[in-house]
Length: 479
Image (cartoon, rainbow, N blue to C red):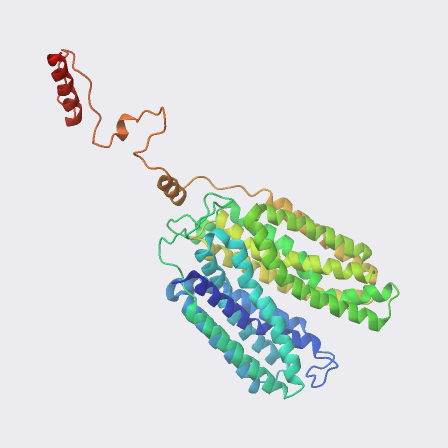
């Protein structure tokens, strides 16, 4: 099968699932609009939390399911769940918090089932370009979410909200099912036409899969997990409170309320766009300089930008620029960390190990969102407290980068693919100038033994050597 078609299928699946982002954004932008469905007291934090928890549970179950039924059926099940979630809006009252959380949980399960499976499929087909392929696949959901949200805004002015959701659900589910028709894993022993040596020579080496207990006993697993949780928590805290805290900071620095609202709304849109761009850009950088170094650079960039905004965030231009950079960093981290897990934990153990790491990240993100809601109630309009919290959160990426520096390459085991490629490049029968062939590499069998003690030739001489000796004796007799 053409590997481009397989990756295109994974991209279509993620683009279709991007409609879930438009559903979540509906609960943060419906206030004050025509056809608004939410009351002012509606708590949108629980909507995000329900989706993230269901996402995490589905991610943990995707590994065993993919081993049994394969990525194609997993993607098809995800599309069916997505369509069922949108169809349930006709039966449930989405203005009710409990029922809205139930629908969001179905959407989270649909996305979690195929999230890691689609990444794993892309990296199996393109092991020499893991970063850029992973970034492209994940960017499909980010950019797709923006397109679906814009389509939702247009349709809701023309038809009812339920008809809008039903139309978006049908089209996005069909897109996921279309991608499921082409997504597939490469055959066993697949090697790409062009193989670029990875940063870690043990990456993508075939071998027996390890048990979960063995994976959890490796120091590399906990180093990668700890680094990801530290780095991503700061970005989640910033992005989750950007629209609220950014507005309060700008107003406290003297901007008009309407102008501050427009700037924060623009910054929120830029965050979503830069997240998708960062997944592609930093994935490409990781393929060039290595995943570990890329994460360290991302940690430094994120720390500098968060501290800069905490000290100069009252300037609208600095807030927008810092938001753009932090958005690219968040997207890059979600792209590069799967590559690190594959390189330093192993290809066979990728789905098991990264599902646990990513589910932990989702649990931390859900806790961060709930903590943000409590901080809003506690701080209120106290801008200084928001700035101090933002400044303190800037230390988390720095700690994550320090933890990542502890990551070391695993020991040599099963250097199969690299050794095979080296053997293909050098023919055993070719000798370099001035080079003597070792006796054990003689092409015609075992090496010829030397003469015996009595001076008689050994019977182990090959026929070619005896033929040359007979010719020499004939020449001497003629002379």
